[in-house]
Image (cartoon, rainbow, N blue to C red; front, side):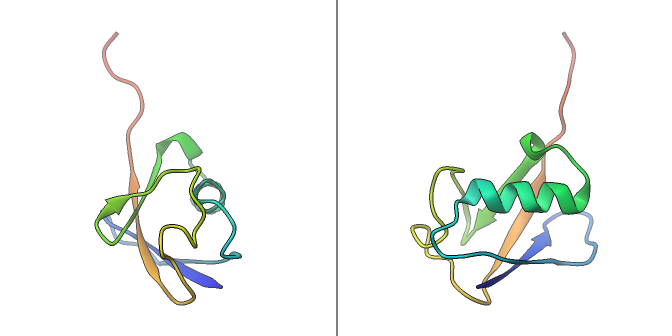
Length: 80
């Protein structure tokens, strides 16, 4: 199934990925991170207003062919 990932902030071209319904949200995050050349730990995926858990399958969260989800990139670091 094809999923479209749109950046929630900053725009940019959507990322289209082909995955299976049983694939995990973690796999989706990894593919998006690789495409954007960012650490997977900074990627947050939001679908239907909810942050998705990496361990869940795409089918379990209700994602299907042609659906759109949103990418939020968290910053790392801070003051120690």
